[in-house]
Image 1 (tube, one colour):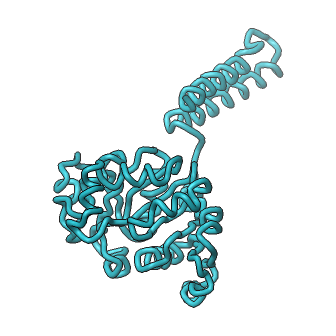
Image 2: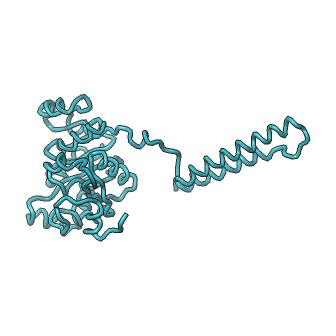
Image 3: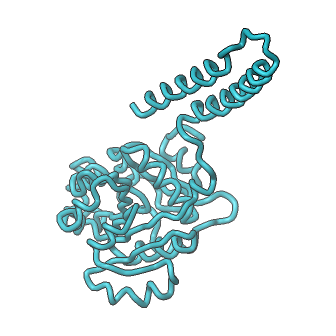
Length: 278
């Protein structure tokens, strides 16, 4: 609907410019002719600009705006959460690490520098424009009860894996449609993205910004805005996102699924998942 409104606005602006340029064109007054020529030139320039914006589907975006720092709240500052915090801080994003005992995280935050702070899970949920939830999978419903309201409408990246392989929890999650479907039930209203569950915590710093082709990170999400945000944050962490599909497709890269845990680039991952080449 927003795109329709934008297109109508574009049409209106073009009508306005050309209508203004065509006023009083039938005149023998030299001064008015000069003004009209200027109006015509202005209309042509405006037409080119508005057409470019319309084709883009929205207002012009600068490269600096696309790469602007994003405040990230991190719920679960364990091995995955702290590794991603370091990578995002290095990319210029402020982060808040959280725990029920935030003072225990201060040494970690100090090593990350002034862009890192600490707080409770509730504070991190409120702080983050984007929130990373990286807790043991069985703890996810508790996160939803504790801070779910604060996460509604926010982009939330969730990394947990039912563990260990073949456990009753993993079997139950698989029977319910996979982690994407189950996680969405635990965090209703969040713009959820399944991400960063295929790499071990030791691989995150070791493989980030790999020379040559970047290591791929599969993601799944229902919301297009959440996909765009996640793809940028995956890139900022030093990897390349591969969109597998909506949340229901997250089961394709769940633990125990056929997708190998060995690092692969985006082309290799798309081929392994039978996704269209880019």
